[in-house]
Amino acid sequence: MTLHILEKLAATNQDCEIWWDSSPLVYEKWKHETLSKAPEGKRSEWEEQLQRLLNADTIKTTGQMVFGGVTTNPPLSLQALQAEPDFWTKQIRAIAKANPGAGVEEVYWLTYLDVARKGAEMILPVYEASAGRRGFVSGQVDPRFVTDYDRMLEQGLELSRQSPNIMVKIPGSAEGYRVIEELTALGISTNNTTSFTVAQYVECMNAVSRGLSRANAAGIDLSKWRSVITHMSSRLGNLGDLSAQAAIRGIELTPEEIQLGELAVLKRAYRYGKETGHPSKMLQCSMRVFDDGPGGAASSWHVEKLAGGDFVYTCPPSYISQLMNAEDRMQPFDSEAINEDAPDRLIQKLRKLPYFRQAYDFDGMLPKEFSQFGAFAATATEFAAATRKTVDFVANALEEMSSRAA
Image (cartoon, rainbow, N blue to C red; front, side, top):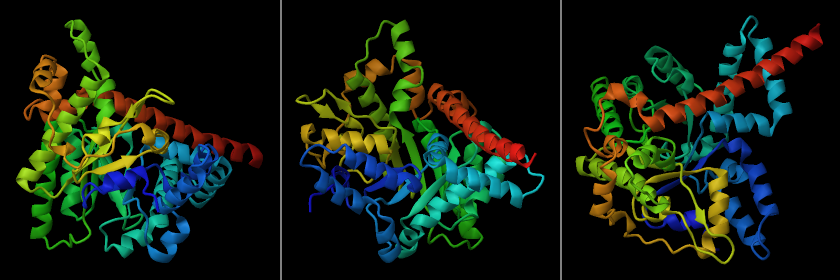
């Protein structure tokens, strides 16, 4: 058996976890597409590896898969609908018929809950076989309401009721951390998303600690509770204000320096969690592969320079495909990489930028400022746009149903 490149990464720390960053409902289709493009001589090896990562039949019979869990977000949920438009159009119409008088927005939310529930049910045997330590599916509250505490709390509670292995995904706004405290106090597992900065991560840990204290006082069962805190790496360095601020100040930043800056933020938060013994686990997402093409070098520092840490890495289909194609030209994982720091001179260079100080410093921002941070605002806008597209997918299905009825 040849280990998949992500299994090799996981082998650098026994508590490292690899998750699938998309709906599990699309895995089989992606697998077939990936195998159809496999390089000569690689197809059988890749097929065996991909079967091991996630296989519906194996999950049903043994409750086992290599992926430790699943994350989704609005763009990925939209992809799940678009991958099987006929099936989901029928589902949407069935939901509408079962809920007479429901408007487009309500049918959309019920459809989203259905997508989350079906994905969770698919890997529920993994959750059950692991006594609740693995097999979670993250379902996200509506990103159009990232500062609406009441709405996020209501939706978070609804999501948690869909399946015992639903982990509720909450944004890193001041209001979001209040929601995380409330859900934690009820023993509901959470995933802190649209989070990029040390100040956010500390605020999340504090919210989780307050929630756990309340849960313990109330006698809540926490045996199957989990918390992960997401670092959206390349979004931090490329969607926010880093490059614009550097250009104004005449500071040149290479792609490598930007990556090291992103990783410095994550490593700082990771070490703080370890030093304080916090139960939340840092989750790395939004990784990139830098590939010079056939015959050239390839790298993905977003995972290579974290090897040896007990992170959760959540990997979208496109990233996994890129890693598989680049693996033979990448350096082997070094289990001591987690202990390497960015050069002091680079940190001092980056600290000339207000944006980096906001991300790196423990007191870089106040909670009320989180939702205005550049990467947060850009990501929330992107996710809201995907949500609107999903709402329109629902609206179109209902319009066609009405036209046929007429």
